[in-house]
Each structure stands twice: as C-alpha cells, then as structure tokens.
Length: 452
Image 1 (cartoon, one colour):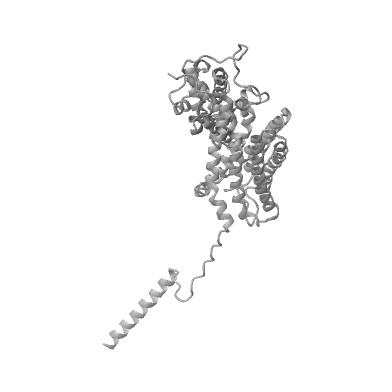
Image 2 (cartoon, rainbow, N blue to C red; image 1 turned 45 degrees about the horizontal axis):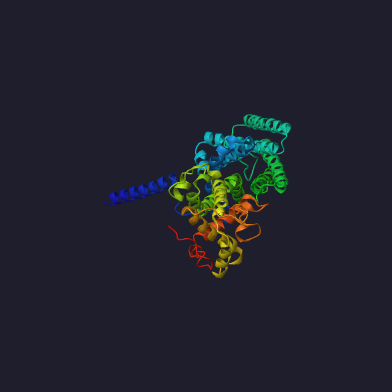
C-alpha cells in the first residue's frame, strides 16, 4: 500500500514537472512581465489638418481641370497651364493616404506607384516651365523646357534602374534615401527650378497685367507654386542634412498649393459667370420697358419678342452675349421714335411731377423720362399725330441739357455701360407708382384730346 502511494506521488510530480517544461517550451513566462510597448507619438495638429485637406484639394483640382478643358483646347496659351495643373492633380492623387496604403501592401506596387508619382511630378514641373516660356513668348525657351523635361525624366528612370532592388521611394529618418541620394536630388532640383522660375514670372506679369482677371489668376498660381517650392525645399533639407522639423507642415503646404492652383485656373470661369449673371440681371430689369416700347414701335426689334422674360432668358433670340446689347440698342431706338409723340411742355411737367413725388435727385432724370415715355407710348398707340415745332419741323425727343434729354443714347461721350445703367434706372422707374400716376392733366398741364 505504501509502495503504491509512493509510486502515485512520484508519477504526479513527474507529470507536473513535464507540464511546466511544456509551458516553458511554449514560451509562456510565468514570472517575468512582458516588455511595455512604446506609445505611438501623436500626430501634430497641423499635420492632421493638412492630411484632412488632401482629398478636397485633389477633388478641386480635377473639377477645375475638367471645367477648363474646353477653353484650353481653343487657346494654345492655356494648354501648358492646364497640363501643369492636371499632372499636379495626378501626382497628388497617387499621394493620397488611401492610395499609399493600398500600394504598401505589395512591394512591387509601392515601387511602381512611387516611381510613376515622381515621374508625373517632374512632368508637371516641365509643364510649368513650358507655361512660363509660353507666357514670355519665347520659342527657344519652350524648346528648352521640353528638352529639360525629357532629360530629367530620363535621368530619373536611369537612376531608379541603376539602384539596388528597392521598394517605396522615400527618405527615411535614418539611413540613406531610397533608391539613392542622386535620384532625390534630381527630383527635388526639377521642382525647385520650375517653381522658382514660375513664381518670378507670375509676380512680374501679374503686376503688369491690364486685365484684372489675368492679374488675379497669375498671383494665385504664383502663390500656390511658392507653397510647392517650400514643400520641396523642406525635402532638400531632409535629404542633405536629415532635417525633419518641417515635415508636419508639408501636407498643409501641398494641399493649399492644390486649392490655389485650382482657383487660379478657374478665375476666367468665375469672371465669365459674373459677366453672365450681370447680363441676366440687366436683361431681366430692362425687359418690361423694352417690351412695352417694342410693342409700340415693333420695327426697331431685330427679332420677335418672346412671351415672357423668363423665356427670353432661357431661349434667347440672339446669341446670349449680345442679349443686353440688343435690348439697349432697341430701347434707345424706340425712345428716339417715341420722342416725336411727346407734346410740348410734357417733359417739364414730368420733371415737376417726379420732383413733387419726392424722387431723389440722382433718379429724377430717369423717372422723368419714364413718365414721358409712358405718355408718348399712349399717344402713339391711340393714333395721335406726331407733334411739330412752330417752324413745321418734327419736335426732337428733348433738347440737350434738359430733363428727359439725359438719355445716354443722345449724350455725346457716353458709352454702352453708362447707357445701360441709365436705361435700367428708367426701367425701374417705368413700373413705379409715380410713373403710373402721371398724366399731363394731373401734373398741371392742359388736358389732351379724349383717349379712345
């Protein structure tokens, strides 16, 4: 019995020792605690903000490129600029965090994406150089830009092929740049050369530009290019001296550069939209006056009026950029013809009427003319005869220097913009209660013949 207990105890001890041996073999530490994992350093706020702008800036660039393609196809001067922005957008697309993360899953993909991104970046720099050469109208400079771009692209491909097997193109915090320092110096030099030249040209020509839109576009493009130059200068410091203090700011610099370049090439579109909006507003305000006058004098209209002004705007009878011009010309011609139906003294009565109604002084000329036109239109539609002076000649619309004669069409030295502004004021007064309440009789004049 004692022997059996001894054998059982010995077996239990042996089994326990064997279990401990298995745990030790499996790498389970029962006494020593695990080494603490070093905490991941937090991302600086400025870097996080810059990263958040990555997708919006790329989207804005592509939208700007798509909107400007039709204009660039018609204008050779804009093709280099559009190519520069399009290639920059492509390079920034390949540098988006999600794209980089996907490429890092496969070493072959990471190398290919990195190389293509850098090649497109150099192509973008070359397009900037070409744009600068085109802006200076130098044929030799354009040829030099093309030759330089081809040489830089060839150098990058040769340096990449000559380097040992490698994956992602990067400049690590420690160690040599991948694939080589020479590769990165060629890449950085290409960008710095293009960006510095572009900033200088944009600043110079932006100050000399006669067009406000061109000046704004050049300044925005130059500012965006300057931010890109700072981006690559920070990489130069990192490649040569290992300086990393500027790294958190680089996403913000690059993405702000994207927004500014998108805005730069959209400036012409914004000016066109502003002009179109101004034309639509002017046509909308002129239409009631123009429509009433053309009804009385239909032969002054080049085309038959549409049913409503909304239809006129949606389906203009003339090219849209000529719509305001035609309305102004036809309104002016109608005013000149209706001036023959203004009885003597009505103009003075109209001036007295609008002054007594409290119309502000700057708007009295327009308001008085609106009253006169209302009366002249009624006379013409009622079939009343044209009025003549005492010597038998037809009475002109108004002598120079008096109330209703302030029509820009009859004022020497006025331009289309002044004429349009005045006629818009007349159109606004034409529909007012002051104009509707005007008749020569109520204004103090002699009642005319009974109306039909």
